[in-house]
Length: 103
Image (cartoon, rainbow, N blue to C red; front, side, top):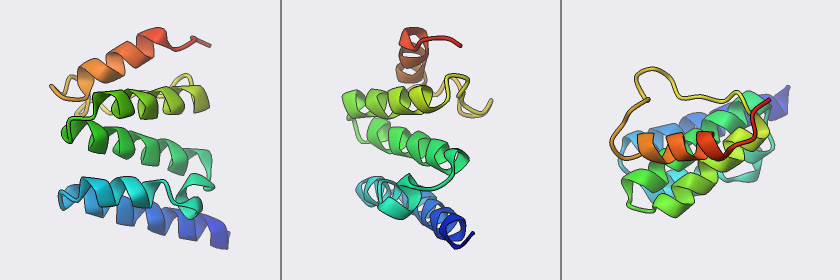
């Protein structure tokens, strides 16, 4: 359980960095071992915010790779309704989703 608490804390910190506009900091924090080794739901959320961070900092290829990794981890992964259709990451996610193997 201590590992889950650490991964959740790391995820919250990464999301805070994203919210503060520190996209590189968010990417680094969300890729840290405590987050990347956490439960699947934590890893998926971290990959989503990693993708968002790459997309809003004009790194579409890395954004796509993060979405691809999320979809490999969980083929049913999707964006929340308020996140869908975003002009920066929406088209990148849609392409990743179309290319992903479906369950």
